[in-house]
Image 1 (spheres, one colour):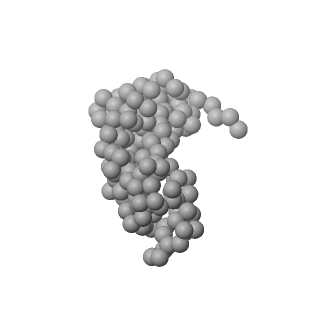
Image 2 (image 1 turned 120 degrees about the vertical axis):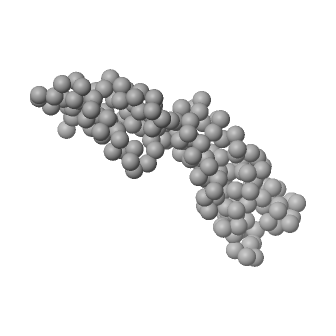
Image 3 (image 1 turned 90 degrees about the vertical axis):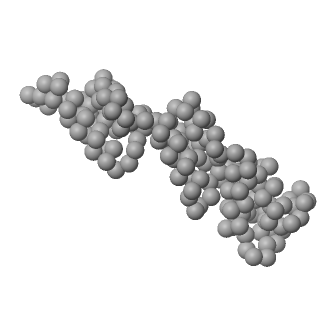
Length: 169
């Protein structure tokens, strides 16, 4: 079923904008959202693109919608999370949230190669038994690669965990 634009009979353009703003604020009450995500959600509710964009512009002006701050918050959350994340995984999440590419790279500046290695090591520690066999190492390595960890970080982490400089070479 195709949705029609939100413009009930008897509502002026200003009233429609007020309803869109109310809907946007309701969405922002649950969690921060990107401009693109808000635009899509408002359009899905039946508001026109022009109405949604004008509401988003007002919310940006007062600081309720800030893609750069959202990107930074997502990265900081991933860095402090108990579950290890790869840089690729965080980048993918930011794209899925609708953060523009030009804001993703600055947000990931804290995610150094050393952080990636530490995250890979934490991930492998969780995946490996206390006395891992070669097969266990290979399985954990493959799982980490599928999660997006960089190969150099994984190799360094495996060397640290096993004490073997030739681990999985």
